[in-house]
Amino acid sequence: MGASWRGSLYALLLLSTWAGADTAPPVALQANQLHFISANAEFTLLHEMGHLLINELQLPVLGREEDAADQLGFMGLFLLAERQRDADFYAKLLDVADYWRLEWQRPKRPDEEVYPWDSHGLDAQRFYNIACLAYGSDPEHLEWIISATGLPDERAFDCPEEYQQVAHAVNWLEQHFRRPAATPIQHRIQVIYDQPPPSLPHGEQILAMVRASGELETVAKRASETFALPRGLTLRLTSCGADDAWYNRHSGELTLCYERLAHFQQLAQQLPRLRAGETQQINPAPR
Ligand SMILES: [Zn+2]
Image 1: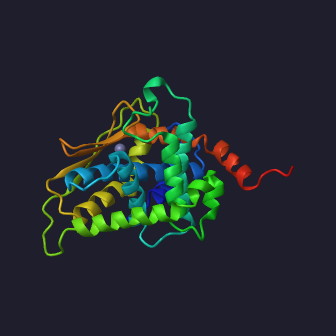
Image 2 (image 1 turned 90 degrees about the horizontal axis):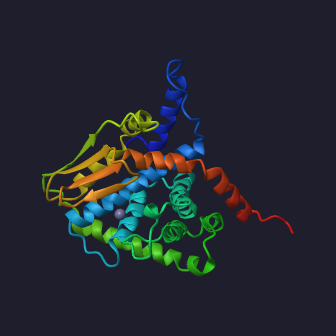
Image 3 (image 1 turned 30 degrees about the vertical axis):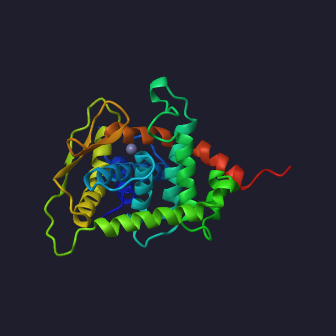
């Protein structure tokens, strides 16, 4: 795949530091916060790509589409990373799980709350689901994920099997719906960047970061080449007035909102507190 979000974020940070006198000093985000933002931007994009593929390819879905999109998004991280499953990659999986933990624990307005009747799983469930799949992907080496996330043994026991089930389903879908090599690519996903609104803090920085990463183009190209898409589709980074992302199956447009990326930036500030809690779990204080 192309340049990683992470690399580009570092580049942007350096650029922002260098940008100098007449620009407002950027908020000094720490490296772990930058990793958190890029990991979750990537997961959001891949979750929405899951909706796109489900709808465009008419993938069979058992269970809720939102759960399937999370699973497709999670496995998308593995597909994009290919063989590079190093410490950075596993830290990325923990960043994605921890986003749902922060979201779960964050006080919310009534209109932000996820209710039991919602089509989405509760934030706490999405946290444990991702933690379970992450641990289950390599239980021999990733036992630390159990301590870092507090995943109870009752769930952890079956996570290797859960991961195998999801990996099997995604492999099957990829094989079954793959574009035959001899078939020319007829339809592609085009990427459009709208300007961020001037009112959005760090809007220009976010745009520069995403553009420089090439991530949207990489994902759009990979999907267009792997599958025979039935029509031309669009992936748009835009301002939505809300921290959101969605796939519109009528218009064939995937929307990623600037506000969602800004929201990750906000939540990233809670990471030190959260991670301090994790350290306590890993090394409980002597009694
Ligand atoms: Zn969704």
